[in-house]
Amino acid sequence: MFERFTGQSRRVIVRSQEEAWELGHGHIGTEHLLLGLLQEREGLLARVLGALRGRAETGHRPLGRRESVAARALGDLGLDRGTVLAGVVEAVGRGTRSVPRHVPFTLRTEKALEQSLHEAIWLGHGHIGTEHLLLGLLHGSHNTAVSVLRGLGVSQEEARRQVHHTLDVLATGTRE
Image 1 (spheres, helix red, strand yellow):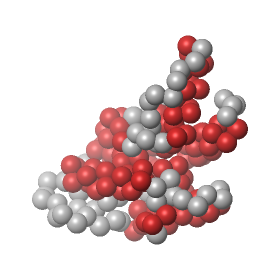
Image 2 (cartoon, rainbow, N blue to C red):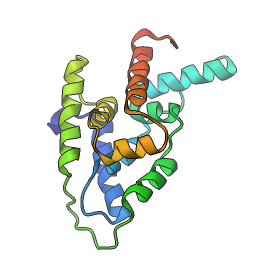
Image 3 (spheres, rainbow, N blue to C red):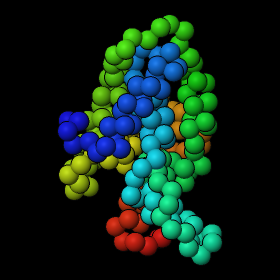
Image 4 (tube, one colour):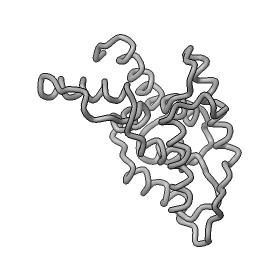
């Protein structure tokens, strides 16, 4: 399955593992995947949205800042890594034990990754980008990432709409 992942998506997986290590968790949960998504700062769609946001604020801004589709969509919802990290720590705490080098995915994370493939296929994309990872993550209703988002005032549906809006902006080249 990882052969369809873009470079950005592969980096998200690596960053998710790093998040689990930093929190002292012996698994990669959906919360770690969410934190990994917020760290990735390379994606064409996010650059387009950044330019559109800049145009609305200052008339026009060149495509300079790069973020992933998922990071931009979450940012547009008012979320950043620090806020989400605080929500994750509140929800699941920090581990105290030494974490092995290989940290396995939880079953819910595996399901989110599988769902990201379905999201890519449904959208007619031949790759799995950060947008598909976020959509896959949002598909489950009983996972820590969704609970953290809910606790921060962001519903699954609102986040899904934001991702699709972001994709529409890229496809049409318009703001709305």
